[in-house]
Length: 347
Picture (cartoon, rainbow, N blue to C red):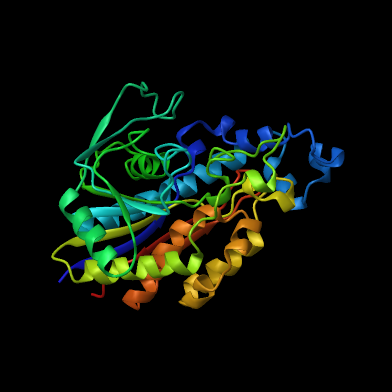
């Protein structure tokens, strides 16, 4: 019988940069020509947001944020290494990287033989962009999972090689950050791509909002799979892999609500209240709160990428397991709050 370790991490792109550049998303949102004039001045922001911004455009806050994220990544990495998995399955979103106009699957198991991961430009490690780390895949397990999911009623797409991009940043960054100290990461990985951006994956290129000539309602894309469907997908994945011969890490890779997806806040800060509600339910093991959350509510709160976590929470429900460790790291100026989770097998 298989053994499962469940973990949750972030793939926050600015973490690969430097502290002084970590608020670049907020600075970009301040260029919105439709932003109410009073919100262009920090003195009119919510008080905790002003405190984080400080007198240095959030650089001191970024330094503290980075330290907290690094510590959490180290704890998760230690658990993975101690568990010694046969492979790590990563639920992550593809933001108009590998999947584009030619096909947008609701979810896709990537049965790759291997993958290349490399750092972005001007990265915190001072590594050249042509430096590549080879990451092994596990095509046998990936094909097994895709086949079993199809038999279980989930019409799952699968791929043997990338289409437009070697590996989306939801997967690549998670690995880079788990190896933040550059000790090497050799555990095989199975990317499991989720269409989290739904209506905006092509219309918004899976990225920042379009301020000039934004897409009209009829130009938006079809929606993401529902939270309930992805919760059940995660639960079924956990059930199938529990019956497999492998030791598996099930990982959700994303931050929580995103400022640049939260229109009701003029794209300036995330929905911390909505995040806190789901975090409290997660810690309490109240998983039906997650399963019953409407997609419209998640979109309203900028929680699109949390659909990756919906799969993870479904897996926890199937395993009848509460998290043993969690950490919620809120922020007003760094685009998205971060959550980390560890839920190991019974001892």
